[in-house]
Image 1 (cartoon, rainbow, N blue to C red):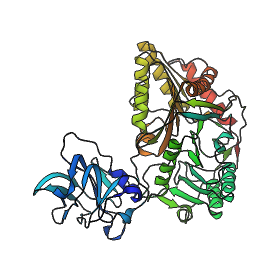
Image 2 (image 1 turned 90 degrees about the vertical axis):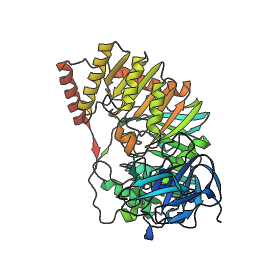
Image 3 (image 1 turned 180 degrees about the horizontal axis):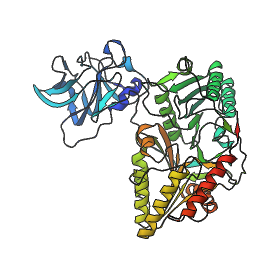
Image 4 (image 1 turned 60 degrees about the vertical axis):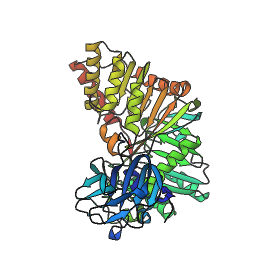
Length: 525
């Protein structure tokens, strides 16, 4: 009889399987099944069974109606992964595995998996036509590398808080002296400065790994292809999330782990973002061991998953889009500072970020400040929770980008929120951001909720929360919250009075401002 081993080497595939909802009672549940693995001969099939109370596996048999596989003599509780050949899908995961001597040969065109005790079916799961490499749970098929990471709590500690474009050196502070490892995750990477920092880390002997999205909006650019080619030529591991097995619509996260520090950003690794050449963004660098471990584990799961492809293989036969880079220069009005925090929580989408952010908004009792490029409609959970906070009497401010490509949609949101505030007498106000020479556009995805700041790559819409890989850090503490609140308030004051509701002249002025902003954009080839 083979021993129970930890799932340290089980694929990210299995992580998708272990997140089915918990039911009441003591009856076991078959919560997930993986019937059509990518490996040849369907090696690597598995099922996930939840045992709500301590149970002896030897009392059960797993069957598809044809093959009957007795389970080993093991005492278990909670979710277990039953598999005969986990090595066929093995890589970076955590959990518990029960190795079986055999596994029912599940049909790819649909079947039913049953857990039997004393010739009586106690649990089962029926599935239809199985896409290759996907796991069936919660009534739907899930991409092979989608994870189910928990919220990781860390702290207390001290963080280095900064805003962009004011502090363009801060995003690379953790990388500059790294000698052991650098794990850089991004949506895009077009910055020559970032590329040089990664090459220098590799020359110092650090193991450098890069993970970016393979199909960003507008296409992968020639500049980015040049940067990635240079990194790969230097022996740096570059991987791209894309193709039919990609677990997420976009790999949109923006963070870097360097030795024992990690930086989480709202901005892309490009001149407009981390280079300080355009965007208003927020960032933070942490050295808390648990937070750094959580981000490193997220990177490894995503980079080592089936949906991540080596750049040199990914680029074959592809053409890349022409692109430009911003060259703006802006004053350093807001300096980076070191601030203490009581708790740091690492949130990731689609795994847990939506629930965690909504929970924090629902607990607001003093103030909410939201700085976003854009937001979803009134029914979107983040915006709905924000309006609900205002209805509880919480002072609420929403500041959205006034950039030309977002102005029309954001202006409509601002008008609706202000009209709602006027109609119901709410302490709610919304504005379009006016840069006034301090930045070019708002690209931040941040909020300050009482004494907690939320910052990261998560846009306030359902697609970002439910389809993308996003990373957010939530820092709780009066001083860290006050830093970002004051940064928000500077932008709020500069943006003037809130947009008058339904006033035609306001629309004309807003349109003129958008045209002027568009004409003032400066690019480099």
